[in-house]
Image 1: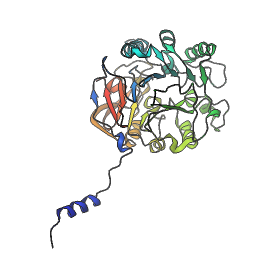
Image 2 (image 1 turned 90 degrees about the vertical axis):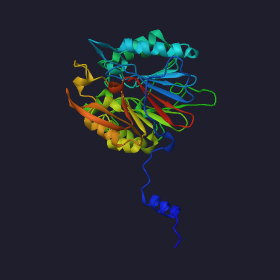
Image 3 (image 1 turned 120 degrees about the vertical axis):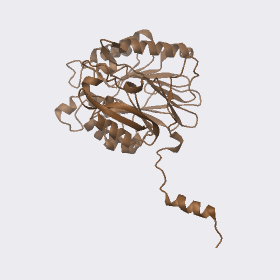
Image 4 (image 1 turned 135 degrees about the horizontal axis):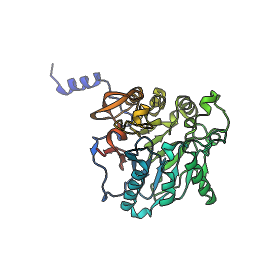
Length: 371
């Protein structure tokens, strides 16, 4: 019998299971230490800046012809001023992108909590905001008492309403399985490149989901959910949705939410993501926006216990791409942390500083970290 090496090799390959890949064209590359500098050219498709504003959220989506900001919150402690950090980052960004004339095509505020709105007055004052999109609930579901960041959101809403540039989104407007978009939600078009911005969740005016009163009254569960999709490689932002609202989101939209990149909900809280969500999204990569555990004060990641180990385990188990191993700190509870080694493509501002993910013209993603 003639020995055929190619046949043996083929049989061996057939016997091995095909490696799990979520989206082959979106495999993560090795993380690059160092952020895009002042001479960086505009992205060909999308550059996502998850800004290190401590315990909070502020994410800048940079397109070839425009920029969109999602949330403008952050931490305020004795040695960390997120407003100053956000201002400096945006100033440096617009110094590089002079073609944008200090203009944000849209600002989305997912919900009116201070860690998502603290820097909003600065943004409204120092930059041109063409559209403001919110859940319309700065005073909570009963409309009586301002949420912790409700004053910032309410004042911004009042200003933008006068200009005819305010868009508030209620859950009732969002069509199941399709989401909601219009010229204010999606004002970006860059020639032949037309990013799709779609909202999949909004503020509930009535308790149509049948939640317990405490769940319905929780502003986190009324967070806007935004998908930013360039060329079929979406990024999903879920604000601070908690478990009950995540279940409702999945029931409403299911596999429509499938995404390449997930901005992990609620800063890695124990109730900010679920395995069901990860199995539905099947993301390649994920990013956590949270503070550093080294700042041992109230209202910090250390005080809240973010990110929780259970959340990190859930997210990393559901990611389809890898990263160079990195040892980080995860929480067992408030003020209690232990070591954890990352091997799948989860990044975090509290661990690595600002994180920038860039999509290239082929739909692949590259990660840059500040440190």
